[in-house]
Image 1 (cartoon, helix red, strand yellow):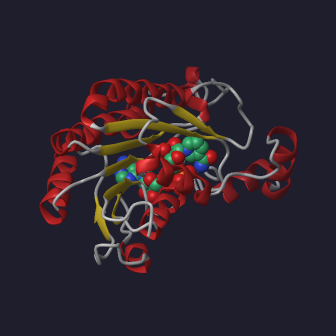
Image 2 (tube, rainbow, N blue to C red; image 1 turned 120 degrees about the vertical axis):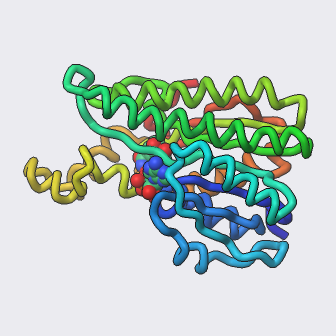
Length: 265
Ligand SMILES: NC(=O)c1ccc[n+]([C@@H]2O[C@H](COP(=O)([O-])OP(=O)(O)OC[C@H]3O[C@@H](n4cnc5c(N)ncnc54)[C@H](O)[C@@H]3O)[C@@H](O)[C@H]2O)c1
């Protein structure tokens, strides 16, 4: 028996990193899992176990900023599986740059992926969840959605907006059996962490003369009380709990998943 037996879930940005961790855990807990990413994740989908309903995980190639695509993918999921129970808005992006050096284009791009897409996909999913009287919306925000850090101004603002959108959804949808929560990861070991300005992290670090292994070891020792970076399985476990019946009384929360790096409310 899995925590998510009989459920159908969409996870965006799940071709790799934290989203992959969520998709793997959801499939392992019995959910019929649909991976949405701008890169093709069909190999990952083929690796995932069959759901409790005997269905294969599937991969859809889509840019989350495409609203028409959001509505189409959600309508297709409902058409094919009878219902959509869980939506995880996880796709995200960032540029590291001080605000005074930022461009309007970068502002728009980060807000479109990190914030607008959360609205577009949640709206489409919530209409179905409200009508069926059960649903879970989980949005990946960030610890930087609660605190500013130099170089991450636009990213922080886009992730703070995700928290407030999530809370508003929770208030609107609570009466219909639908919860909405945000997860605020700290420093997680994924590809996103090791890229800056779109350049591969290793290349960028070499350019700066930084030894990444040492840099991360020092960072962990200085800033993360539990003594390690987060991993995709950490968010998979929390998302699966929030998505399950056990998570039914948690809504409107912005849960820290930081190993103690940030301990704010
Ligand atoms: N890694 C961290 O330390 C960290 C910390 C806090 C929050 N987050 C958030 O967690 C989420 C996942 O981050 P990650 O570290 O796994 O990143 P990642 O770069 O490893 O993975 C992000 C995934 O999202 C996909 N994606 C990006 N833009 C997309 C778009 N427009 N349409 C469809 N797919 C798109 C990418 O193809 C990729 O598969 C993001 O929202 C990120 O902001 C990450």
